[in-house]
Image (cartoon, rainbow, N blue to C red):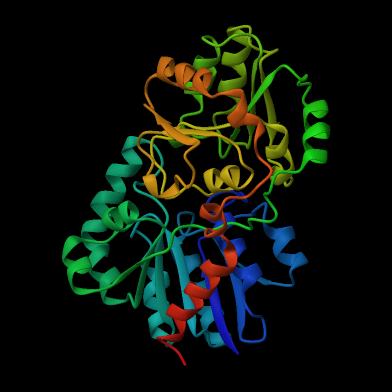
Length: 366
């Protein structure tokens, strides 16, 4: 049996966390044993434990590099790992790559974005650090992956891409799990107080700067009263978003559901999915919404690779008026006809993703 150490689990089940959960839950456990490294407590811990997936907890790299390196080395020293799958958006932490190679593991870098998230000073600091860490990163890299073509271009240098293969792995989902459910629709709309004539719009993701959720609050000022907005997720901007909602007198139009484990159910109650992010790799949430049959409006900065259906369209990420206009252009027929899962969405199912993932790994360790 081959062991895979999985690095980069996010604090939430969305985004990168969802990709990791999709893979580890679908691996053939008679052939592969995934072990997930956590540096922070994650919403996924209970889900991993329910799947009997072992967890290794270490001190965060940014909190104490010395402790992180020591604890990582202890993990490698006590048992052999065939692969180390490192999910990231920067090349700052090269210690995990060096340690993996020291102990004979195949290293996999998997890029999930097109920028480093956070304030400007953090992005500048990371760029400066990467001047020194990037050469070490490439010396210790075996397999390069990215969630989209644009993510590959961002993360891997042109020189590297010309001389090495980068596997583009468009994110996948459990299509059956996210299919539209008529019974769930009724209960969700009752839970959030949406009557039959009201149009329920949903945002799913972290309430953080890169996701641009404030644009949606501003947009709600331009929409008629029958349009309602539900934020599903948590993050550092939640308090500010709630404050602005009260300030604008939009309490009756905007609700905050927090982090939820029943996103697949909630989607069935909505009429429209919105994602105004400044940057994304390939957003899992948009795939989930399309599997549910929801019309989607996404930012014009997001890759076309996530647009599986004609009912998914774009709007400028910095123009609230463009979003209000796009929302009101969605026809009632688009919002209602959601029973059949199109073949375009079926192609994004987890089974195909994991089969491709395993096939790549088998080229390096037999």
